[in-house]
Figure 1: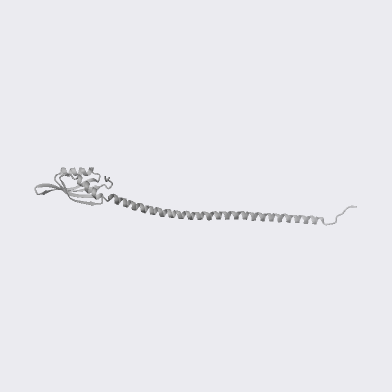
Figure 2: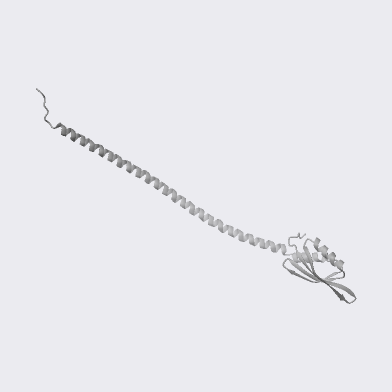
Length: 184
C-alpha cells in the first residue's frame, strides 16, 4: 500500500524557514550591535587619548608662555642695564674731557696769540682772543687741524684793534670737539 503522508509538512517547512530567517536576522542584528559598540568604544578611547594629549600640550604651552614672559622681562631688564652702563661709560669717558681740552688748547695756541674767552656748547667750542699777526693765527688754526681733540676750525671774524703801542687782531673762531679722541 502506498504511503500517504497527511501531515502538513509544507507549513512545517515554511515555519522552519521563517524561524531560521528570524534567527539569521537576530544574529546579524546582534553582530551589528556588537560591531557598533566596538567601534564606539574604539573611537571613544581615541577621543579620550587625544583629549589627554591636548591637555598635556596645553599645560606645556602654559609653561612655555610663562618662560617667554620671563625672558621678555629679563630682556627689558638687560636693555635697561645696558642703557645705564652706556650712560656711565659715556660719563666716565667725558669725566676728564675739560682737562684734556684745556691742556691741548695750551699746547696748540701759537706764540703771539692770546685767548680772552673760551665757551663750550655741546660738541663745539667758541674761542675769542687777540693775535699779534695773521701768521700766528694761521699757525694756531693749523695746530687745531692736526690736534686729536679738535677738528674743523672755522674762523668767524677778525678785526684789527689798536692797543697801546701795538696793533692786534681780534678774532672769533668755532672749533668742533672730538669726543672719541684717545686720552693718552
